[in-house]
Every structure is written in C-alpha cells, then in structure tokens.
Image (cartoon, rainbow, N blue to C red; front, side):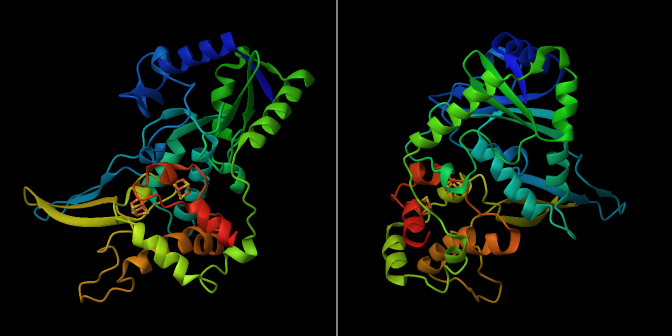
Length: 335
Ligand code: SF4
Ligand code: SF4
C-alpha cells in the first residue's frame, strides 16, 4: 500500500487532467454525474454516488457496430476505445465492471467493443465517505471501501489517501507520478482498518445471503410474493437502465444514405417486447414472468454461469423505482 498526502492528491489530479482525458463526478442540476473534466476543480469527489453509473463509458447507450457500403464492399468498423482515466468511481460501481468482465469478456466470444474500452480506460475507485440508506454493498462484499474491478483503489483516511495498485495498468499510472507517493506506514494501515470497520457497521442492510439457496431461487420461487410485487411494477425499465450490471441490448439494422448500418443499444428484460419473437412466440409473456426473470437472472443464473452476482448493492434501483420495488426484500426472503 502507498500513501498520498492531500497536497499530493491535488498535484496528481492536476497532473492527470493536464496530460490525459479524465472523467470524474461533477455536480449538475442537483445530481452527480460522470463527465470529462477540463480542470481539476470541476471534480466533485465528496459525493454520495452518481444518479447513473459510469457503465455508459464501457457500454454506450447506443453505438455503431459496423457500416457496410454495398457499392464499394467496404466495411467500416468503429474506432477502438480511446485512452482515459475514470476517477472517483465508488467501489460498488467498480465491482460491477468486474461482473461485466466475467460476462462480456468470457471466451470464446468476448465483446470487442467493451474489451477495447476496458483496456483503454484506467479506473480509479474512491472509498465511500457515508453510505446512503439504500446502499447494501456490504451484502455482496463489493464496497464500501474496496471494489473488485478497479486499477487503483483510493481510500480516504485522515491526512491523505491510501493507494492500492490493483493492475498493471494502475501500476503504469502510478509510476508516472512516483514522486508523489510514499510507502504507507503502520499508522495509515490502522486508520484504513478503522475506516473499513466503521463504514461496514454504518451500512443499514443486515442481509445474510447463502449462495446455495440463491442458485435454487427458481425452484423455490414464492409465486404469490412475486405476483404481489409484480403488480406494483409499471415496467418503466428504470431499474435496468440505472443498474451498473444490467447489460441487455438490442441490435438494429438500417440504411443511411445507401450504407447499411448496424447499431446496438441498451435494452431491458422488463420490456414486454424484449423476448417477443417474429413468430409472435414469447417465452416471458406476462409481467410476472418478466419480473421474476430479472431477479432470478441476477441472483441465480448469473452466479451459476459466471461466478458473480448480477447485483453489487448500489441501491439505485431501490431509490429510483417509482413503484417502491426493493430488491433487498427479495434477498431477505431467499438470501
Ligand atoms: S423501476 Fe420499478 S416500476 Fe420500473 S421496471 Fe423496475 S421494478 Fe418496475
Ligand atoms: S440490481 Fe439494483 S442495487 Fe443491484 S446493482 Fe443493479 S441497480 Fe444496484
């Protein structure tokens, strides 16, 4: 572990902004959101969490997959990801990237566009200062201090920050600013342990999950509970779009000035048309089917197939759902 003084952190931030594309949380219209910043003062690092996760920098809401000109036979593929530093990501959102890595980078068919962005964006996480009531990263051990998908973990302690290098990409960045860092001493590590204990204690969710039970979620489904919950859902899809882990997508082909274009964009399993096929057949025809699918997929099928939960406990779906659907209630019942 390394230690970075507050002054060293300011210099690091200035150095990063003057030499690289830096994406950081900023305040906008009463909310926090990630944005490319032009000067260090724009970064607002003392935030709770952003309304939307930084997922879109890796999986854009809409992107061109390729263009094909039938006249010339030329196939245009999009430019690969450009170098950037994503700074100040909360540990839960950094952990969501490692879940997406398990899914989208799995051989033999990794998603090349996602892969190129993961390679070119260095992710620096920052520990939470005060978890929100709806946060439950403690349940999945995806925060509040340390995540699993970041290149560098920063933890704020009194007098500065503890720095943990988590990847080769992170090491390269640190090497570029080596004079700012010193080896962390025993007093720094003590403060780190103290902070971890305090934050975990402050988290209000006390849900014990047992993987063996969750992977059998579908077999033991309490249909009445899900029917009641599904009645509340207005199928707005907000829970999927705001989720740092949800990765459902749709592709669309169209003609643009006689050039074939294939585009890809976010979609959601909550949508009534998501699984409807051209024949009219739909394996999830009812709202209850779709509602159950969301939870079974996140808590049961993703863990079975990819060895990670499809939820990192960021709490966004809990705070944003207009109908008051709360994934923690599902976990309490089956965890
Ligand atoms: S945010 Fe709530 S109402 Fe909207 S789709 Fe999700 S569960 Fe249903
Ligand atoms: S399911 Fe809800 S709490 Fe879990 S990661 Fe997605 S938005 Fe966050």
